[in-house]
Structure formats: C-alpha cells, structure tokens
Image (spheres, rainbow, N blue to C red):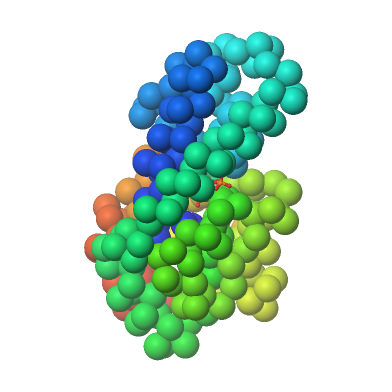
Length: 213
Ligand code: G16
Ligand code: MG
C-alpha cells in the first residue's frame, strides 16, 4: 500500500506553491519549513496548522476558512496540469511492475482527495487493484483508517500487508493498522519505519519481501 505524495510522486512542491499564494493573499507567514509539517496531512488540517503557526486561528471565521481551503485547491488543481509520467519518482515504475508480475496486490493509501487525478496524470492508475477515496475517510493519518480501508477492499489481513510512507504520521498509521512499514526518507520524530530507505531509487522487491519474510 503506497502513500502518494512523497512515495509515488512529489506533489509537495505544488501544495507549497498553492498554500504560499493563499498565505500571501491573507497576510500569513508560510515557508518551505512550515510546508514540511503539512506532508501527509489533510487539506483542512493543513490550513489549521498554518493558522496555528501564525497564531491566527481566531482571525478568520468558519466561512472564510472554507473559502481559503477551496481557493487553495483551485490553485493546486491548476498546477496539477503540469504533471506527466516524468514526475513518477525514480525506481517506482519498475518496482510496481515487478510486484505486480509476482501477483502482489497493490493499493494507494493517500490523504489526498486529488489522488485519482494525480494517478491519471502520472499514467499509473491501472497498476493498482484499489485506490482509497480520501473523501470517504473520516480520520486521517496517523489514524490507521485509510490503510484498514485498503485491507478491507483488497480482502487481506493487515499483518500480511506492507505500507510505503514518507511521513511520520504515515508510519504511525501503518503501525496502528498492524501492518509492516517501509519508509522513504522519513524524518523520524516518534516512530521509525521497520525498513528505512533513503530514496525510491533504492527500492527492491526481493529485498523488501526477504526482510519481512
Ligand atoms: C497529501 C499531501 C498533503 C496534502 C494531502 C491532502 O498526502 O502530502 O500535503 O495536504 O495529500 O491533499 P488534497 O488537498 O489534494 O486533498 P499523501 O497522503 O498523499 O502524502
Ligand atoms: Mg506522503
């Protein structure tokens, strides 16, 4: 089960550009360092974090916050038009192909409501047996819900699954689901991945299977 942003592709830069435009428009501070905290976090939670950093939670009412989130998504979706299969992270295509040839089920467990659009633009949607719909997931990572949703829909038990994640919240979610975790350049603050890699180009199907055997 694969996280999208940071594992299959890197949309973090586009999320950053979209939030930066919103921050400028509303007179809020936002930089790349702050953007790190938004990785793997839902859209609305991202806004709340930006407001927290600015101690501006009270400055906007609910309607304004919804407007900001809507605007951010419009800008982000416009930027997504730039994405092509060249944006698939190195090694991923070969890794997915080999896993599939070995009969391993593949799923996407992303917090993004735009996951379908991104996967279509990358051209890798057909590779997956199931793509979780973030719009149907009530609790985001570090809650295990999205991973358990994948298990249910694939008809498999969590202990026979491996999750691939780049965020700390994602690694916690995988552990809470009772699955094994592979980390891609995770900035560990609480829980280390079972099997850490420094980049997607290092991924090797046989190595991952041997490790969790
Ligand atoms: C991704 C990004 C997050 C983003 C979230 C929601 O998570 O890492 O920064 O806030 O999706 O995206 P959207 O606004 O498209 O619904 P993931 O789980 O793919 O790493
Ligand atoms: Mg991620």
